[in-house]
Image (cartoon, rainbow, N blue to C red; front, side, top):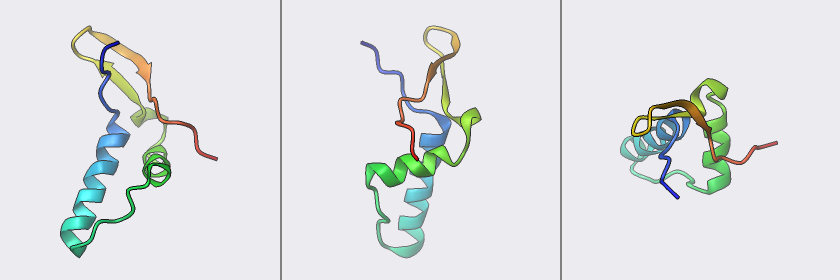
Length: 68
């Protein structure tokens, strides 16, 4: 099984967490449920991957679980 990387939504969420850490001096919650909910706020356009190695555009949908 190959690693499919992360979606743009996941990367943007990680950057926001890091920004909050730098600005406040404290780590915000990094609970998986919170991070997944934050990533889903970017919408479906940010939850797809492009596999650059295999040239498969939109071949993989985010492995993030759906949130209610």
